[in-house]
Amino acid sequence: MEIICCLKQVPDTEAEIRPSADNTAINYEGIKFVINVYDEYAVEEALKIKEKIGAGTVTIVTLGPERAAESIRTGLAMGADKAAHLDDPAFLGSDSYATAKALAAAIKGMPHDLILCGMRAIDDDAFQVGHALAEFLGLPSVMGIVKLELSADKKKATVHRQVEGGVEVLEVPLPAVLGATKGLNEPRYPSLPGIMKAKKKELKPVKVADVGLSTGDVGKQGFKTQVAKFSLPPLRKAGKIVEGGTPEEKAGQLAKLLREEAKVI
Image (cartoon, rainbow, N blue to C red; front, side, top):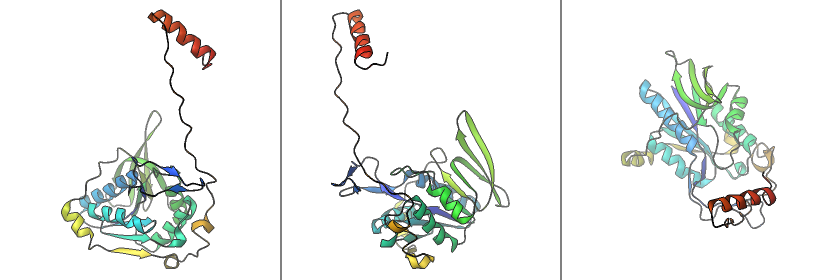
């Protein structure tokens, strides 16, 4: 079974994110980058499927700058077989639409029985690339899956996803684009042998021309949305200590503050 995993490199969740001086971009200087956590679930699920079947190939596909190769190598160290890195200055600045278009163009030329990705990316939280990728490829898609089962003939998948008040169970014909979320599995850590083997695995650089696109299709020329401004959230005001000698007096003072200053009662 040929499985493709779409992987994105994102800033570490513990990194301090600040806008650039002109507030038009993010200042990434000194930021540590990691694999998007939801994409880790996708890679792990692909590896589990391959191990259960006992055959097949897991291919990582990533769009990103040169530094994204580090995260790709981590995915290869986990056990993926090979990778394609859409690494071209023309790709930079792509929004969700242009990113999905580029990924789809690359994946069309690869054998694929199943495409796995993260439900969302933790940096922009757009929730769009997975569905847009499926649309460009003409495939069904289900995002936010917490359980995945393949039919005996590998032609269909039964997926579970959490919805308000319960769990939705869907049967999807393959190939399809499925978006992983927390609860699907527990991603493995790359082993030392896996890290050493990853250095020798294929990591193919892909340019815009290689996937039949032009510079007008991707990057800042191919986007449909543009971020106008980045800004930090306003600083929280200092808290106020409620005065009073007895619990009753403090409760009365608190009620007064909530009514007259906070205006919530």
